[in-house]
Image 1 (cartoon, rainbow, N blue to C red):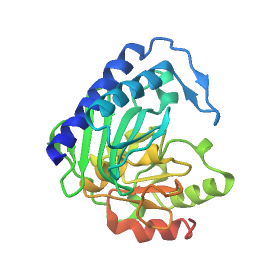
Image 2 (image 1 turned 60 degrees about the vertical axis):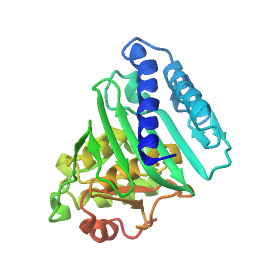
Image 3 (image 1 turned 120 degrees about the horizontal axis):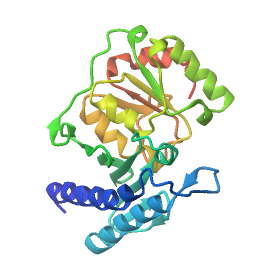
Length: 260
Protein backbone atom coordinates (compact mmCIF):
# COMPACT_ATOMS: atom_id res chain seq x y z
CA UNK A 1 0.00 0.00 0.00
CA UNK A 2 1.44 3.39 -0.98
CA UNK A 3 1.99 6.19 1.49
CA UNK A 4 -0.62 8.30 -0.26
CA UNK A 5 -3.13 5.46 0.06
CA UNK A 6 -2.34 5.02 3.76
CA UNK A 7 -2.89 8.73 4.39
CA UNK A 8 -6.18 8.64 2.47
CA UNK A 9 -7.27 5.63 4.49
CA UNK A 10 -6.49 7.42 7.76
CA UNK A 11 -8.64 10.34 6.66
CA UNK A 12 -11.53 7.99 5.86
CA UNK A 13 -11.20 6.39 9.28
CA UNK A 14 -11.32 9.79 10.99
CA UNK A 15 -14.33 10.85 8.89
CA UNK A 16 -16.17 7.66 9.85
CA UNK A 17 -15.43 8.19 13.55
CA UNK A 18 -16.63 11.81 13.35
CA UNK A 19 -19.95 10.71 11.89
CA UNK A 20 -20.52 8.38 14.85
CA UNK A 21 -19.33 10.77 17.56
CA UNK A 22 -20.88 14.12 16.67
CA UNK A 23 -24.56 13.16 17.14
CA UNK A 24 -23.80 12.19 20.75
CA UNK A 25 -21.81 15.27 21.82
CA UNK A 26 -23.61 17.24 24.57
CA UNK A 27 -26.58 14.90 24.23
CA UNK A 28 -26.71 13.76 27.87
CA UNK A 29 -25.31 10.42 26.81
CA UNK A 30 -25.06 7.74 29.49
CA UNK A 31 -21.79 6.02 30.26
CA UNK A 32 -20.59 2.93 32.06
CA UNK A 33 -17.35 2.11 33.85
CA UNK A 34 -14.86 -0.28 32.32
CA UNK A 35 -12.68 -2.63 34.34
CA UNK A 36 -10.12 0.11 34.96
CA UNK A 37 -12.91 2.46 36.15
CA UNK A 38 -12.61 4.73 33.11
CA UNK A 39 -15.87 5.65 31.36
CA UNK A 40 -17.04 4.33 28.00
CA UNK A 41 -20.07 5.25 25.89
CA UNK A 42 -21.89 4.06 22.81
CA UNK A 43 -20.07 6.81 20.93
CA UNK A 44 -16.68 5.25 21.76
CA UNK A 45 -17.81 1.82 20.66
CA UNK A 46 -19.68 2.80 17.51
CA UNK A 47 -16.80 4.98 16.32
CA UNK A 48 -14.30 2.15 16.74
CA UNK A 49 -16.64 -0.31 15.04
CA UNK A 50 -17.00 2.04 12.07
CA UNK A 51 -13.22 2.30 11.71
CA UNK A 52 -12.74 -1.44 12.06
CA UNK A 53 -15.26 -2.13 9.29
CA UNK A 54 -13.25 0.03 6.90
CA UNK A 55 -9.95 -1.62 7.85
CA UNK A 56 -11.38 -5.11 7.51
CA UNK A 57 -12.66 -4.28 4.03
CA UNK A 58 -9.55 -2.47 2.78
CA UNK A 59 -6.53 -3.93 4.61
CA UNK A 60 -7.60 -7.31 6.03
CA UNK A 61 -3.95 -8.39 6.23
CA UNK A 62 -3.12 -5.69 8.79
CA UNK A 63 -3.47 -6.07 12.55
CA UNK A 64 -5.89 -3.79 14.41
CA UNK A 65 -5.44 -2.68 18.02
CA UNK A 66 -8.37 -0.70 19.41
CA UNK A 67 -9.09 0.59 22.88
CA UNK A 68 -12.60 -0.82 23.05
CA UNK A 69 -12.35 -4.14 21.19
CA UNK A 70 -8.76 -5.27 21.66
CA UNK A 71 -6.37 -6.75 19.13
CA UNK A 72 -7.18 -8.53 15.90
CA UNK A 73 -4.01 -10.12 14.62
CA UNK A 74 -2.74 -9.65 11.08
CA UNK A 75 0.03 -11.10 8.94
CA UNK A 76 1.62 -8.03 7.34
CA UNK A 77 3.79 -6.67 10.18
CA UNK A 78 1.64 -3.54 10.11
CA UNK A 79 -0.79 -2.53 12.84
CA UNK A 80 -3.49 0.13 12.96
CA UNK A 81 -3.96 1.49 16.48
CA UNK A 82 -7.27 3.19 17.26
CA UNK A 83 -8.58 5.25 20.16
CA UNK A 84 -12.06 6.38 19.10
CA UNK A 85 -12.43 8.97 21.86
CA UNK A 86 -9.27 9.86 23.72
CA UNK A 87 -10.72 11.89 26.57
CA UNK A 88 -14.13 10.32 27.16
CA UNK A 89 -14.36 12.21 30.47
CA UNK A 90 -13.99 15.52 28.61
CA UNK A 91 -16.48 14.33 25.97
CA UNK A 92 -19.05 13.57 28.68
CA UNK A 93 -18.42 16.98 30.26
CA UNK A 94 -19.22 18.70 26.97
CA UNK A 95 -15.62 19.86 26.47
CA UNK A 96 -14.22 19.76 22.94
CA UNK A 97 -10.73 18.75 24.06
CA UNK A 98 -11.11 15.05 23.28
CA UNK A 99 -9.98 13.51 20.02
CA UNK A 100 -9.93 10.44 17.82
CA UNK A 101 -6.46 8.90 17.54
CA UNK A 102 -5.38 6.82 14.56
CA UNK A 103 -1.89 5.39 14.16
CA UNK A 104 -0.11 3.03 11.78
CA UNK A 105 2.76 1.05 13.27
CA UNK A 106 5.32 -0.88 11.24
CA UNK A 107 7.31 -3.45 13.22
CA UNK A 108 6.12 -1.82 16.43
CA UNK A 109 7.05 1.79 15.69
CA UNK A 110 4.57 4.57 14.75
CA UNK A 111 5.03 5.82 11.17
CA UNK A 112 1.70 7.65 10.73
CA UNK A 113 -0.45 9.42 13.28
CA UNK A 114 -3.63 11.46 13.22
CA UNK A 115 -5.37 13.51 15.92
CA UNK A 116 -8.91 14.47 14.95
CA UNK A 117 -11.09 16.85 16.98
CA UNK A 118 -14.58 16.26 15.52
CA UNK A 119 -16.49 19.15 17.09
CA UNK A 120 -14.07 21.85 16.02
CA UNK A 121 -13.23 20.24 12.69
CA UNK A 122 -9.51 20.13 13.54
CA UNK A 123 -7.18 17.46 12.22
CA UNK A 124 -3.43 17.00 12.70
CA UNK A 125 -1.55 14.54 10.50
CA UNK A 126 1.99 13.33 11.12
CA UNK A 127 3.93 10.99 8.82
CA UNK A 128 7.48 9.77 9.37
CA UNK A 129 9.86 11.78 7.21
CA UNK A 130 7.31 14.51 6.50
CA UNK A 131 6.22 17.70 8.18
CA UNK A 132 3.07 17.68 10.32
CA UNK A 133 -0.02 19.43 8.99
CA UNK A 134 -3.06 20.96 10.67
CA UNK A 135 -6.08 20.90 8.37
CA UNK A 136 -3.66 20.54 5.49
CA UNK A 137 -1.35 23.41 6.44
CA UNK A 138 2.17 22.97 7.88
CA UNK A 139 2.64 23.52 11.63
CA UNK A 140 5.72 23.59 13.81
CA UNK A 141 6.50 23.52 17.50
CA UNK A 142 7.98 26.61 19.12
CA UNK A 143 11.46 27.12 20.50
CA UNK A 144 11.92 27.27 24.27
CA UNK A 145 15.10 29.06 25.33
CA UNK A 146 14.92 27.93 28.94
CA UNK A 147 12.79 25.55 30.97
CA UNK A 148 11.80 28.34 33.37
CA UNK A 149 9.72 29.88 30.59
CA UNK A 150 8.03 26.66 29.50
CA UNK A 151 4.31 25.93 29.63
CA UNK A 152 3.79 22.37 30.89
CA UNK A 153 0.60 20.35 30.53
CA UNK A 154 -0.88 17.08 31.78
CA UNK A 155 -4.35 15.57 31.68
CA UNK A 156 -4.70 15.48 35.45
CA UNK A 157 -3.05 14.62 38.77
CA UNK A 158 -5.42 11.70 39.29
CA UNK A 159 -3.52 9.72 36.65
CA UNK A 160 -0.25 9.78 38.60
CA UNK A 161 0.75 7.55 41.49
CA UNK A 162 2.11 9.43 44.49
CA UNK A 163 5.69 8.96 43.31
CA UNK A 164 4.84 9.91 39.72
CA UNK A 165 3.01 12.97 40.96
CA UNK A 166 6.08 14.06 42.90
CA UNK A 167 8.21 13.69 39.76
CA UNK A 168 5.72 15.74 37.75
CA UNK A 169 5.58 18.49 40.35
CA UNK A 170 9.38 18.60 40.48
CA UNK A 171 9.32 19.22 36.73
CA UNK A 172 6.49 21.74 36.98
CA UNK A 173 8.39 23.70 39.63
CA UNK A 174 11.17 24.33 37.12
CA UNK A 175 8.74 25.66 34.48
CA UNK A 176 6.46 28.69 34.29
CA UNK A 177 4.09 26.80 36.58
CA UNK A 178 1.55 29.63 36.83
CA UNK A 179 0.73 28.78 33.22
CA UNK A 180 0.42 25.04 33.84
CA UNK A 181 -2.38 23.38 31.85
CA UNK A 182 -4.51 20.66 33.46
CA UNK A 183 -6.86 18.64 31.29
CA UNK A 184 -6.64 18.17 27.57
CA UNK A 185 -5.80 14.52 26.84
CA UNK A 186 -4.50 14.22 23.25
CA UNK A 187 -5.40 17.84 22.55
CA UNK A 188 -2.37 18.96 24.59
CA UNK A 189 -0.07 17.20 22.15
CA UNK A 190 -1.86 18.73 19.19
CA UNK A 191 -1.44 22.18 20.74
CA UNK A 192 2.24 21.44 21.37
CA UNK A 193 2.67 20.46 17.71
CA UNK A 194 1.09 23.78 16.72
CA UNK A 195 3.43 25.77 18.96
CA UNK A 196 1.17 26.65 21.91
CA UNK A 197 2.53 24.36 24.67
CA UNK A 198 6.14 23.43 25.45
CA UNK A 199 6.07 20.20 27.49
CA UNK A 200 3.52 17.46 28.15
CA UNK A 201 4.24 14.92 30.88
CA UNK A 202 2.02 11.91 31.61
CA UNK A 203 2.03 8.43 33.10
CA UNK A 204 -0.09 5.34 32.67
CA UNK A 205 -0.68 5.76 28.94
CA UNK A 206 -1.37 2.72 26.80
CA UNK A 207 -0.33 2.15 23.19
CA UNK A 208 -3.64 3.48 21.87
CA UNK A 209 -3.13 6.65 23.93
CA UNK A 210 0.30 7.60 22.57
CA UNK A 211 1.00 5.84 19.25
CA UNK A 212 -0.70 8.46 17.07
CA UNK A 213 0.91 11.34 18.94
CA UNK A 214 4.50 10.44 18.08
CA UNK A 215 4.47 11.21 14.33
CA UNK A 216 2.37 14.34 14.91
CA UNK A 217 4.72 15.83 17.50
CA UNK A 218 7.96 14.76 15.85
CA UNK A 219 6.86 15.80 12.37
CA UNK A 220 6.29 19.29 13.77
CA UNK A 221 9.85 19.45 15.08
CA UNK A 222 9.23 18.18 18.59
CA UNK A 223 10.32 15.09 20.48
CA UNK A 224 8.45 12.27 22.19
CA UNK A 225 10.09 9.79 24.54
CA UNK A 226 9.63 8.01 27.84
CA UNK A 227 10.77 9.38 31.19
CA UNK A 228 14.25 7.99 30.54
CA UNK A 229 14.53 9.82 27.23
CA UNK A 230 14.11 6.62 25.18
CA UNK A 231 11.96 6.42 22.01
CA UNK A 232 8.36 5.25 22.33
CA UNK A 233 7.28 1.96 20.76
CA UNK A 234 4.69 -0.77 21.19
CA UNK A 235 6.42 -2.10 24.32
CA UNK A 236 6.77 1.25 26.13
CA UNK A 237 5.40 1.34 29.68
CA UNK A 238 3.37 4.52 29.37
CA UNK A 239 5.56 7.18 31.01
CA UNK A 240 5.39 9.77 28.23
CA UNK A 241 7.11 13.08 27.57
CA UNK A 242 6.50 15.44 24.67
CA UNK A 243 8.75 18.45 24.08
CA UNK A 244 8.23 21.17 21.56
CA UNK A 245 11.92 22.02 21.67
CA UNK A 246 14.14 18.90 21.78
CA UNK A 247 17.00 21.06 23.09
CA UNK A 248 15.26 21.11 26.49
CA UNK A 249 15.30 17.32 26.96
CA UNK A 250 18.28 17.21 29.30
CA UNK A 251 16.80 20.06 31.35
CA UNK A 252 13.50 18.21 31.64
CA UNK A 253 15.12 14.91 32.62
CA UNK A 254 17.31 16.66 35.18
CA UNK A 255 14.27 18.44 36.68
CA UNK A 256 12.53 15.07 36.97
CA UNK A 257 15.50 13.66 38.86
CA UNK A 258 16.13 10.86 36.38
CA UNK A 259 12.90 9.14 37.37
CA UNK A 260 11.81 6.62 34.75
